[in-house]
Length: 156
View (tube, helix red, strand yellow):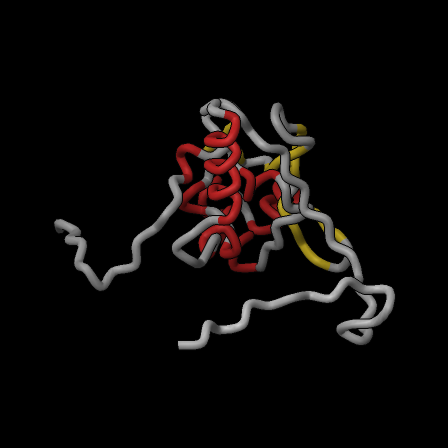
């Protein structure tokens, strides 16, 4: 079957094969479901329990994929081919990986392309770190906050 591209199909503005696998490396965890573990078990020809023990671990109340040391980032998904920077279990990857980035643009690819243009060097890899923290809710503007200015629509 030949796949045809029609004008109403969404375009993508990223190329995963040109990325150092930010999505596999900079998140602290990749959550997996029972369905994901079942998919891994089938892919490797092992039991559900064997797949759960070998490829996942418990982390703060959720089941996640194990990670390993990485040659570029501090650590990465255990299933990332660190030389080719591609997924070794692509057809068995977890649901969260299947959905990523779930839009026509990938923010990490945009950062990568921007930095490479700015540095005039196609080998540059910006090191990105995702940090989650709690933010206390408060008034939008007070004397301790900088006011956020928004563009007003131009008058016609």
